[in-house]
Picture 1 (cartoon, rainbow, N blue to C red):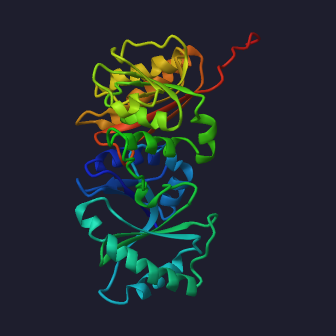
Picture 2 (spheres, rainbow, N blue to C red; picture 1 turned 180 degrees about the vertical axis):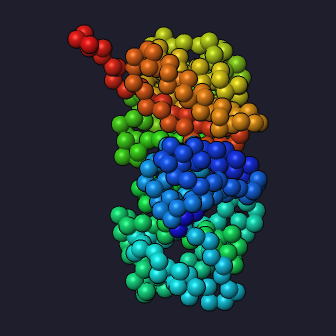
Length: 358
């Protein structure tokens, strides 16, 4: 099991390779990354048998930016019939697993395998239970089978608490009929990814206030209003009437990059299409100056050196907070609903007090 297999957005295979190779080097795991453009997946092939396991154990999945899902394992060829016997034979080398997910890559060919996987999973699950290779226990590794075709599958393992929350890293979110734009799903997914579900009532409640920079027509504002927040929407464009009718939205025709709230707010969100460095600077200012406590901002990416650019901006933000002497929790992920962009979440923590004796 010396191969680490990762899912990603089609076209971002190179970013996954750059990112995972950097973490492998940090953890002294030797190997090489490889991927085909547009394949929606990448591999890191380790030269040592335990390399993939050391890499996964040394890196928190939630802190990776571009991979949607990962697993360590092997590729196996399957016959046209009796695929289950071949899978069971290979599973002799695998530990007892606590759950089973069948996955496919996010391409047109991958989507065509969806029905096959649904039907096959029923029979496979029954066979694994009968063979004593599967139990219902989240503390045990998850068995992940990624079908490249009906004849080729990557059979892998991942810890359920250090891998994607959803199969293939793709959330099943329903588009709200009364939301003004599909971009609303980006912010909802960001909350799922960055905020533990049991903290939503504490960190996303109706007594809070928020600002949406570049709000029109109101996709992100809708999410804040849906949680009962009072929202100041900043945009020179028109907002959806349905949002204005709630009485929870104040619409100001102003520039999102120059607006400053009179009073600090709980949340700032921003999905302005602008150079990523400018949005990153805006994020640093709002959190650093205490204008908000938490923020979600999208960074639109350049065509080349995308991982390098994201890493550079995150390091600059982190250095800025260190210089200010404040502690900030920083997260960054290319979400499923993102396109040529990544989503950053920042949360200001208790200020660092400088000790006099040192």
